[in-house]
Image (cartoon, rainbow, N blue to C red; front, top):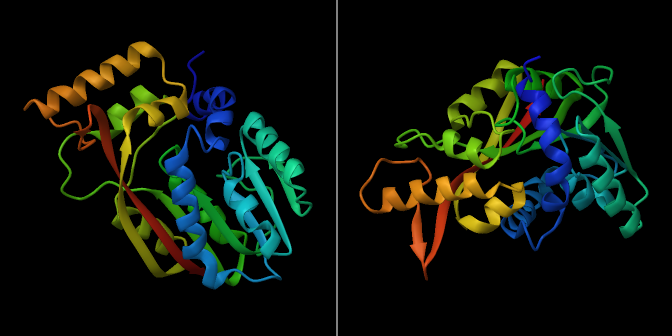
Length: 259
């Protein structure tokens, strides 16, 4: 039977789980996490009941756990949750619960949480609209909702999603900032602030973090070098520094308030 995108994503995650959690292999992502925590900081309260949606190894949950009452980290991939649970146990954190579930149909009652966050999930989701709608549904009125994700610049040449899918078959579609904002307001939440920035990343650690096979790596390297030589745009905005290929990612942090 054909494999759905979501099933493919879950199958990819066991091999990627350690890479997501290892700062040595995924250091750029760790730096982005620190920046996200600073962005969230004004809205984080010691009495918060938090939900991290499509949490993976629960990096956000682990980063803020000691500053809130309780965090639930939900994901569809058991291997990711297991990796996150090992990290929590190692660090002696006792107020994080790990839950297996679907981000598009959260197993919680309406208005259950005072802060809801998702990071790097919308570009993987088959139905990002449903993810955001569910996040708003389980948020109490006035609760903070945070979305952190890749975004596609409006004037970008090339198709970065095609390259990203070569790297990681779980990749779906990167939305624009306007599209993400539209999903949030369409779910009856109010956008309060947003931060947009670009990150230049060395290619090889990015490929390492997803366990990209060597044949796909060679194809990606070839297309990036072709673009540098005047060939077709890939959408990855490549550069070469000290003989090492780099790519550019645009990121968005968005803070909204539930209605």
